[in-house]
Image 1: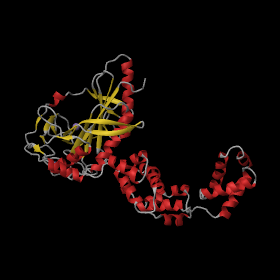
Image 2: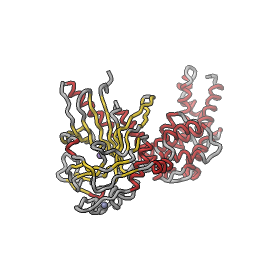
Image 3: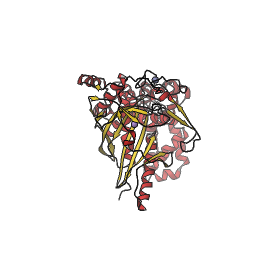
Image 4: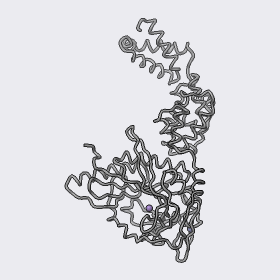
Amino acid sequence: MSKYEGVVIGLEVHVQLTELKTKLFCGCSSDYRGKEANTLVCPICLGLPGSLPVTNEKAIEFATSLALALKCDINKQFYFFRKNYYYPDLPKGFQISQYNKAGGKAFADGGVVSIRINDDNKDIHLNRIHLEEDPARIVHEGSIATSPYALVDYNRSGTTLIEIVSEPDMRTPAEAREYLKQLISLVQYTGICDPALEGAFRVDANVSFKGNERAEIKNINSIREVEAALEYEIGLQKRRVGKGETLKQETKHWDGTKTIPLRSKEFEADYKYFPEQDLVPFEINDSYIDKARKKLPEMPDQRKVRYQEEFQLSEFDAGILVLDKQIADFFEKGVKLNESFGPEEYKLYCNWLMNDISGWLNENTKKINETSLRPKQLVDLINFIKDGKITGKIAKTFVPKMMDGNDIEEIVKETGKQAISDESVLEKTVLQVIKENPKIVEDCKKNMKAKKALIGRVMAKTKGQANPQKTEEIIDSKLKEMGII
Ligand code: ZN
Ligand code: MN
């Protein structure tokens, strides 16, 4: 029986529309990150009595784009609701949101996100997406569970969120991870949110075990943490069920190592939803939706298919490459710079982007557009390797300098690192290595893999600068002369 037998996972993702200049119901700037606390506020987003909200039209346009990208059915008529609860981050005592009951509607219903798991495609269905305002930010000292006080910064109060509610279609933490990867990619492509910004997407993970009630783990900030929190909670629930317990609905917090019960869950009736009378009802028509559709860029799934055809990349490579729009745009600019590039070079370009370049970006927590790397540098790098001017091994050491914008030619000159293709130099080194390693030479008689060890020794002696093809040729000819092969 699988470790995850009986596990059911559903995710609620809050995406903040970071590309909106102003808040959802007032003209205050929504660019609150790094700003002095409580400076981007007005009577509306502070919830002062008598203030009246006005809806940001651009927010409706962004929500329309996302609904189209997620293949949802847009509700053409809707109005906002008040979700009542009392909490220091919510000065009005209610959050303006949407409600899909009591005559209300979500912004859009249904929708689907396709994931790839264990070499198979799986559709994760969406229940709905809706617009709502973000509460203020509560700042704790250390952990939420142990902080002696809480500070409130109202700069975030009233910024725009779209909540994306999935169906409970996921069965393992890995599926949840793949769903979030694809969802965040789609959000990034629509241009409504920069998912790399702190707090730009927050996940509430619902997980239950067999016939038991679910636990909801609130406000997790990264894909990796969602996966870890689910792993932990599943293990915990399994142990409790194993002891014969029946699990009740709980709201929990993930502290990075374990899930901690926060409070018993409030039920929907506690929110006393009712229509927001201070805002007019909305009506969206088909031409508005068509306009939004025309503005959408090529989406990752279409792009993936095109990359397989146009650049002969494998489905796997193309799928990873298109995930981040910035990386995919960079790839496309690069490979089109050199007309002599063919499938072999496309694959090399893709590999360099996905391995060495992405590795550097992850390590330095940077996006590719935040560096000085230009598509042309990677073209040059690949040409230098192909022409035997540098080895792949040397090329790897160039990455940090390339990220600062240095040309390959310059780096080669500056570091003095270029491939040794001079046969007389290589021959001398090969003869030395053969002399120093009689045992390996002997092994070549039985096993040609030993030859790789000889090439390795030559590489080490030349600090990785020996041209690998030429080295192998010379070793072959020497071993033949000696009657070894
Ligand atoms: Zn305001
Ligand atoms: Mn919400």
